[in-house]
Length: 462
Image (tube, rainbow, N blue to C red; front, side, top):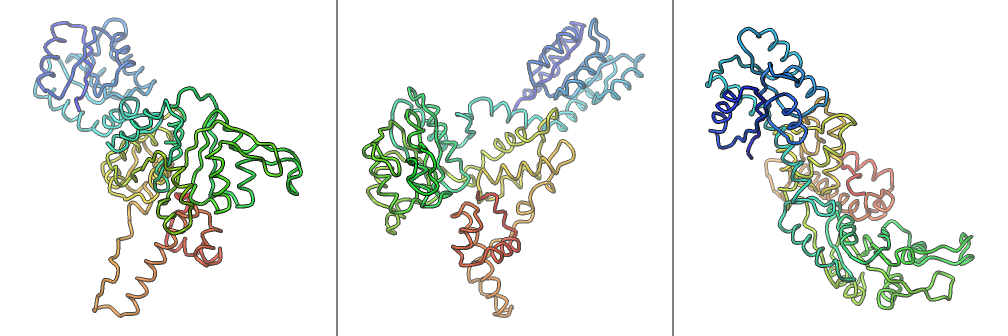
């Protein structure tokens, strides 16, 4: 990554000689300004690592330029140049926020040392600026950020869906961004002015799911005081997103199959047949094919949904996206009027090495927490959640150690299995403690205590 320097000097001869000297380093690009006003306009348009500024310039001088930079919190390191007779002014400039000063005539070796030191100190900031420029460019697709080739293949596939009404099945772990992909498909589709309506099939009890999807007539059941349109009807002309479709009960699977085949249905308690024009996008965090093989999902419904399938890779398989997403979330959760937080090398290293079982949602939660707990402009290792800084070491199953009592080994193995079981149940129940407790055969109180003992963050599964 090349570093950019802005050289503001009113003497053309000095300006040209310094520019040639600085550009002898092929990792540096130099822009020049004849005066303070021109330098300020350049700083507003372009990100620079360093501003090399003469204190004595006509119009807006170097001191006034530093004041404007500090007032507007422009992300640039200012180094001032001054004559021997103006050392006091150079000291005043440093009090205002300048990084260092150089006296004229400029000593070449000293200039190179000061520039090299300033660039080293700016490494973290320049990386963040570079990532933000990427966020606004080639790595963004309908608000989805990725540098990963598999994700770019997904972007290309979404672009190909723009002219069609094809049913789409999205499979991916919890937190991989399935709803974001569904939204991108909806936004990319041309000629469909209707809304995107999302339904979390796992969050609705079986007795309410039919009414939620297809609506009901007044008096259809005890609490049906008025007629209500269902999600399919609301999505007419647009897209309906059936999240966690694998959790739909068998009886509802048959009704959904008919709707997908005929694109018509009746409200609960009604006789009028309602026809709709919707694109159906379904998503699941489990393999629907495996559910079919286990007899838990209708095979005919599976093939009706699986017209075009998108497999989303988990975050641990796209580590190149972690710095990109971390910079995005740091910007999202920055305080009003403050620059986004940067990351220390140790913190970024911990982010990249973490396996992220909760995927992008877990990463976002971690960055939000870190932005709150870090007191200065840089997120340090200690600001990250404990599961990143002190990860529980993975234990190999049945690792027999004859130097330890059998009872201790059994206790460890049992605790490890219990931890994994509870995490899996939380993922399946989307962090809902009641449903998770039912799966585990535990009371809510006992489960909550075990979650606390294992330091499991159930929020990442919601």
